[in-house]
Amino acid sequence: MPITIRLPRDLYQGVLADLRRPHAHAAERIGFIYGRFVPGDQPLVVMTRYVPVPDEQYVVDDTVGARINGDAIRAAMQGVLDTREGVFHTHLHEWPGTPWFSRTDDEELPRLIPAFRAVGPTQATGLFLLSPDSAIADVWLPGAQGPERVVRISIV
Amino acid sequence: MSERYSRQGFLGEAGQRAIETARVCINGLGGGGSIVAPELAHLGVQNFVLYDPDHGDESNLNRTMTLTEADVTAGTLKIEAARRRILEINPRAKIEVHSCRWQDRPKALDGSTLVMGCVDSFSERQQIEACCRRLLVPYIDIGMDVHAGDPPAMSGQIILSAPGGPCMFCMHFLTEAKIGREVANYGAAGGKPQVVWANGVLASTAVGIAVNILTGWAKGSPPIYLQYKGNGGTLEPHIRLGYLAPGPCPHYPLDQAGEPAFVKV
Image (cartoon, rainbow over all chains, first blue to last red; front, side):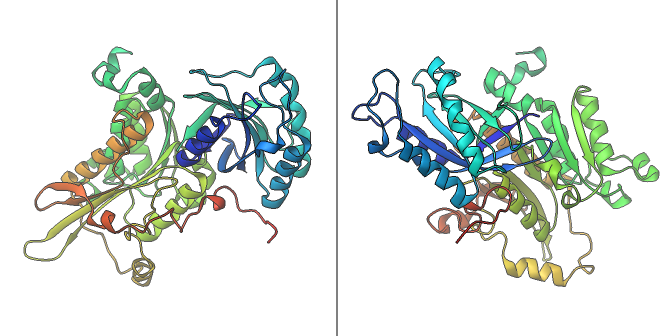
């Protein structure tokens, strides 16, 4: 089923601005975008808000672009429980064009998903990767075994 | 870019791709919708969702561009006339038709890239706008009226209700009083005056806004509320834009987007 993500323009610009902020020791920033799943033949996720990971919740690890601690994960899970929205781990690769998940992203990020799905089983959960002018997202729909690549990300 | 669209090459390859992959819903295939649909097809829109429960009748022939006299005799549905015209322009178009009000089959609207509203009821506009705002789909509305007088006063509007922007309530085009009066007069309203040339201005301008949204070719925000003054033939930003309340739209806050859900308070 072709999945679409809709992201309000102001929210999108806010996310980009936040992810571009420098950090004391991490090379990249991470945040969480929350969205509501609209089921149907053309499944839809409408993104509603963004929560940046606070500076102090990054772990000092120079083998990766950024690593966040358990407090950050717990806060994201609480966000799902409090609002009944799904959550998307979000970061930025600063080269233009369609981004792609790095090998580290592919190895590590999917491990976050079961925790988010456990607290939000009826919502879509996933990974959102931005570039300066593009984006991709992998979405785990409710009940699905694995992720699907989103076919369309609309900035509205 | 193919030869077919070579004259709109200024929209760019990416822009043309955005047009061809968009899924456009048109609510109402009467005077306005019958112009919107073929124009979008000419531009390259491939995917349509059409809603209209009505058959063509004699009184539609003064303005419904997709209807013929033979259609009226045959009782052709307006959506079928629109589908026929779209396929004449592009036989590869994928057209989903619903001979009902959109409220009767709302899920078909979910996957729309944008929605064009071509109906003549305030409450219908309010309902579809609310759905579009919930789904974060840009909604473009058109309509016209002719008020009694000597001479009669012709007016119309094109309104863009986009996520994050002011809604039709913010712009005071919709008010509870207007909707209430309309509901109170139900059955007594009769056919509102409509003519093809005014519909043409409004529909074509709405299509231009749609293309701007899909392609970004004009590199600026599209207009959100244009007023058509038919007597003088002018189209200009509505004076109400100067009086919009600051801040985000309070009627459709972002945290109420998506499907309704229970949350703890």
